[in-house]
Image (cartoon, rainbow, N blue to C red; front, side, top):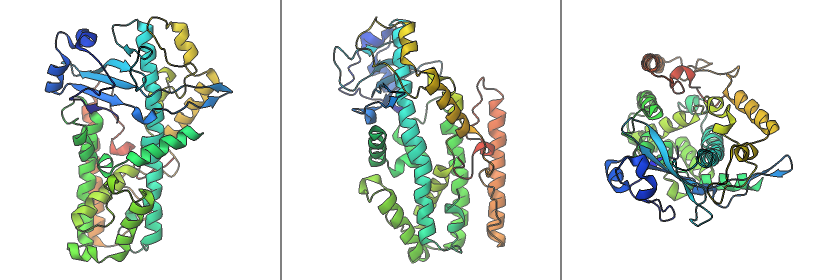
Length: 393
């Protein structure tokens, strides 16, 4: 979720053509940027944060910059890593041509940064905390008979600083998948199944929401006069997004089209992001929760022993694996997207719309399963069968 297309290197990331010539196979950064093949992951959100103390031992966290190349074989690979935001002699740019140990440790620090950002921003904030925002606003402002009520409610210090930074930078467009993909210019990246499956799922949800809301709001004026609905969106803007105009979150809704997009975002966002965590984090070097040694300040000093001494200790590893396993397990009250534990409607039109919604989801599920038969590593996380109606853990 951090990757975006790069058309110009940040000033604090002085990668040269000579550094990456082997990775680009004779091409240049300028040429590959023009083709749209260079991408950047910038973890500046972590800059200045201090690692936690685990088992009475200080842990270390970096704010890396990662340059990636989408090669002719359809693979996106890292080609340069700088572990701190400010370039200096003690902050070298690590390359695939460095020693295996140097390059491996640099990638481990990046994966640790990914763990921090994913768990606090994309998992905690964008899944659990936003679901709470939408639910509380629904319970406070919409009476049970309201059509939206029946669906919208389904469902150390550095950590606090990171959460504040993530909240301050969160935007409406980042939560709306079509806008998010467009802003990061990832439309043409090959084998990006989160985008491919996610866009199909978004469109199915959007189709259902549009038909459902149009049944109750025949015109924009009807919706504008719904004071309970306007209070609902106002509370989400004011309390959930701290009244930040820069967030792009609407403080009022003027058209049914605006409402449809917002409710689509709510349903898509409230769907669970827990499913794949153990797959990625069960092997600790791929997703380390904490690192016991500071990042290297020069090349050529890292050994395999250094890497083992940097990775989390056995106790931390086992505890994190247990947590990630728990987050991945199905809960007793879990329902797949589009399936509801209660009969929310007895009206003919809404019931038919729900049936059509479920039918569309089954078609997408079949489509994904058919594609996955030809993949070495099947992508199953956005198969509607595996997507919860709401956050279940």
